[in-house]
Length: 149
View 1 (cartoon, rainbow, N blue to C red):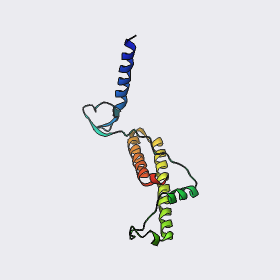
View 2 (cartoon, one colour; view 1 turned 90 degrees about the vertical axis):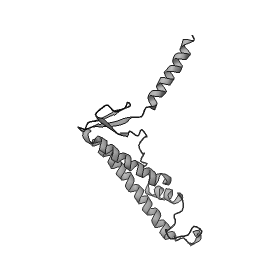
View 3 (tube, one colour; view 1 turned 60 degrees about the horizontal axis):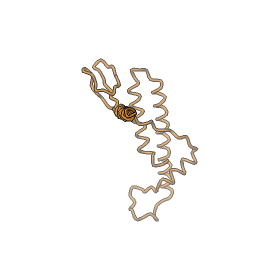
View 4 (cartoon, rainbow, N blue to C red; view 1 turned 180 degrees about the horizontal axis):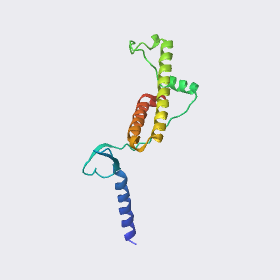
């Protein structure tokens, strides 16, 4: 009876250790790429640790809703405007800036979708490059558009 708690504790500890290991991307000089949770073998160079974050989720929303989300995300100041002059803002210029930001986020969403398609259609030798492109676009989308949701 006393053995089972010890086995359960050891099993939970081993499971936690296995999950915590980072995944390394290793490249050989001949162009082969391997992914491993162990250090790279001799003759291979570690190029990066694989990011295990889930990809950016693209939310399809009607144009009217996206415009409302952009308007509710905060105020936009023109570049020459002082902090205390909120009453002197030009509403047309603010509206144009919001439209430009929404258009930029829409363009990034489209580019992320294209990169996802490229990754799915990529040959094995081009897969790492396509994955990197997708991750970069997802990070750019997250940085520029996450506050507008």
